[in-house]
Length: 334
Image (cartoon, rainbow, N blue to C red; front, side, top):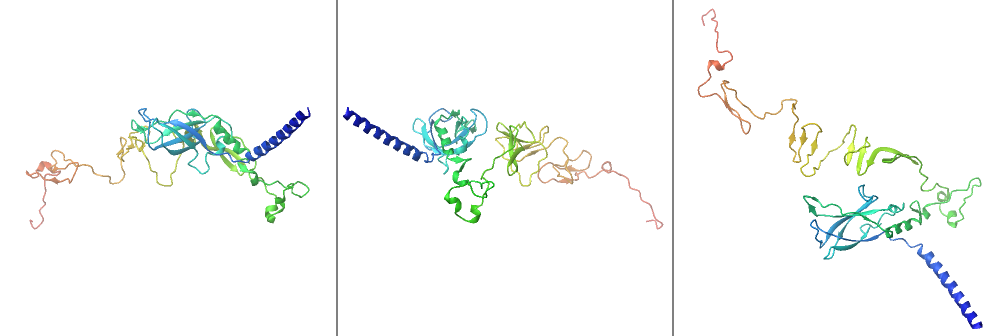
């Protein structure tokens, strides 16, 4: 029994030692920065469903919704799939900061979209592959935010001066060091943000600590200014002034510019079609010369150098506006 008691005592000491070491390990691991990268594997196929090979440009997009909506984040990587088109990438590796930590802070579900670059299908860019719901592993990025306050490290904050006693409430030795200005109390780096808003409107700061609705409204992936029903990627209702050059990039055979409800348009090659009844101020431009029958002139045309001439038969009295000539004799009989 004595021998058994020694064994149990030794075991208890050993367990306590292991538990202490485990606590130290946990404490050490909590200070480790969470890698802002996500491992992702997939398959790349061309427009005919065959595996892609070689180096392929691929754009990865993170969405809040399974369909529609604007991407929260995107990046393009050069991927080298195997013979079957399989590949593995580290999302966020193209940036020194990796994936933005604030994307996963809210704990909401996210979908990943994949789009192959350079693959044309019926003259258009190959469509984005069906989105994939990210599983729990990427949400470990939220753990990295646990070491911050509002996205800032604890070192970015100082304790406010105590009220009424004129002394600092900080007990840290660092609080008593530094320049006089550094020892003065200062407000938190991020004061509480107040204000209310309307869903869909892009917020704006109307003061240094308050947010209100702006005039910009977003519905799905369309942006509206002066309208809450945008019908295009950018829909502006009201007078619009442009202070510099406007360059238009038509899509395919679409016109550069068209006025709704009229025939006026500027084609994708710069050719202008005018609306019916269009008039031009000033002298204008002559596009052709024709001669009427009986005018006494011949020639004309619509292109090249235009020449008018008197016909070989000459000018007859019928061609003249005043075919007669009256002479009055003077006193000398001339």
